[in-house]
Image 1 (cartoon, helix red, strand yellow):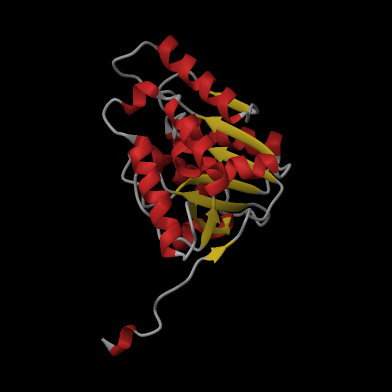
Image 2 (cartoon, rainbow, N blue to C red):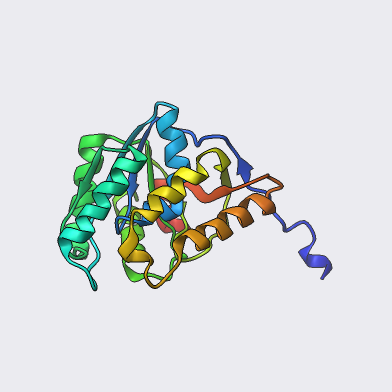
Length: 219
């Protein structure tokens, strides 16, 4: 066991991540609420420019109108209004890359948030790979990979105690999506765990932060 000495690593704790213009890729219109809303609210309050792309909406035992009404309520609740909602099922790989490419060209982000490669959800992984492909030769954009359905090994932790209750309020707007999984309970647990593991009080969100051009090399 001596060979494992010194292998622990402490993520960097920051009040807000570096950058000024943040493009959020949220495969479904609750992934951002679950994975990174606490940080987005802090960035909003800090005066950062935010833009969210929702490439799809979920289908299920509810109407599209019901789901869109929930999404709009969540957008009002978080007051991050600059967003694009694709009101259809998840796009194929080429269309997804086109959507994200359009957002990069028009919004000009310095940082992109996207689910991590450790997600156990196919459409989350497709979003990750689309961003990795697009940034392979880009030397200017950084990425923050967040966790929704799969835990990651973070190198960046953002305390979110001050925005936690608002984050939970945004999650509650997605009522149809909480019929099978209690996302409020899940988020309280993972965000409290992330804080405790980094010797912080309250709650925190965790990310893998790196230059976008390194995504394909690393994963």
